Length: 502
Image (tube, rainbow, N blue to C red; front, side):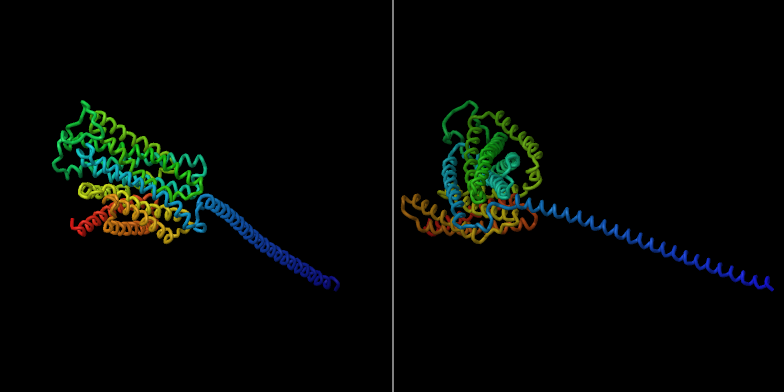
């Protein structure tokens, strides 16, 4: 009995132990699974946390870089884009005091140019080579465009602070001067050749050399050139005289204008108001002087071989200036741009030259009055272009267009009216000619208004289309104003003559 009873108890206890072991095994497995799940969750959380930390660190780096970039932009905009003359300190009186002397200086330069043109039109070179009449306004307008482009670039650089450091200033000035030489030589070559061809096509019977007074000075030479007649020697003369005049005047006037811009900056004056009129008037005067002297020397005293040698040296210097300009980081970009407006201006100026050639001998005093009218009107337009362009480049200066335009208009009309009063008195033995005065004043008002409106529209439209107004606006403006001014002056003289019954 006892053995039988013990057997069930032992079996039950073993089953109990087995159940307990199974229970603990399940608990152990469940705990392992829970631990594994927890480890997986922890790993996922750690990975997400690391990813989030990485994103945050990357974001911090990005924000730091943005802060550094914005700081550098702020510093650069403060040091470069802030002009010394902003809209907040704009003063009409200061503007008048800065502009009026330069405009008066340009009037004096225009009068001297006109008086000199009245003299040199009787020189042997201009009588024997009428192509010089076509070349002269082209060269004057070309040189004015190049010098005013130079001053526009330098005044913008000055007003945004790029001329304050000596090393940067030296590189900018030298680069601009070599670029000026390169542009002057290339465009004057094409202008001289086109003027020669047009003059040849419009040529009539020329007076013989023995009936022409030898000016400026009667110095006989055994190499006197008598075999022009529109051939190779005359073409050589026009090319050499035009290129030599352009090169010499660019070298002298470019240096003067660079110095003027730097001095104006150091004195706290706005070079936008001072430099363009002086550049234009001096350019006209110096171009006329150098062209007249070069042509007179070449036609009277120079052997064709020497003229050919001079022309060869000038053409060779194009390559040298090209090399120097290409190595200058400040101006090398201008080698690929800015040529189109120069050549368009050259073609328009050729039309002005044809007008001058036709009417300079028909209208008394045309050579004296035309440079003053077109010079003043072109100068106020150039001032407007330069100021608007500086404001657009600065981005934080708003140009008071209407105020500046009104002041420029009043100054232009007042100066030209005074010039008309002086001219009408001197032309009629101190008797004031009221009809000429009124006609010329109306012509001055029209030309001044046309120049200012064209300057505003042209500058803003070029900027909107992505073109630099310092490069593209002034050549187009000055050439168009020259042509419109000369045609308006011819119309004024015509109406005046009809009123007087002449």
